[in-house]
Amino acid sequence: MFNQWFPNVSMEDMITATNETLYMTLVSVAGTFIIGLFLGLLLFLSGPGGLWQNKVLNMITASVVNVFRAIPFIILILLLFPFTDFLMGTIRGPKAALPALIIGGAPFYARLVEIALKEVNKGVVEAAKAMGAKYSTIIFKVLLPESMPALISGITVTAIALIGYTAVAGAIGAGGLGDFAYFYGFQRSNWDVVFICTILIIIIVFIFQFIGDLITRKLDKR
Image 1 (cartoon, helix red, strand yellow):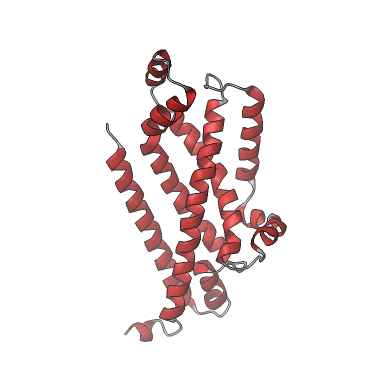
Image 2 (tube, rainbow, N blue to C red):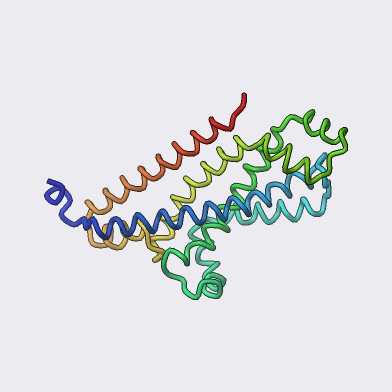
């Protein structure tokens, strides 16, 4: 029945494409979380009233974040071709998509981190200061734990955006379901391939959303 409805779909190739999409998504989410968290902390801590209040540092960090957020992802990939080739030794395949995915996702997540940190009760921070807590203690024992539900919710939103980015990257040879849908589906007018790729991407999005929501509810103490 499946072969009758989807005659052009190769399950082996589809599984390979799905694994490539999952690989790109998982690695880029990990990289985005680390870099985005760092940038978000810098934005928050160097901002007005922050522990490291510094107008110049805040302006530089905000400018970097805003510039990379403003560049459309497809253009960002093209701009990063020389850097990607230098770093990865190739501009094709799932690994080659990782620099663009991380550089494209981290600034987006950084703003979500900044928002999450701003929602932390200032009274808790002031109490930690009054007790003589070091800045590192306030950051790792107060700010991050208190904002963790929002941070997880933010990385969930970012992960879903990155799944979409992997599909865009696939259109220029990064592999994954986007690559398969474009080159083996659209260009050959195999619409059954495009349809199945779309369904698989939707399933992956739902899985990430479910896991993210589950973790957020577990961490939320309210």
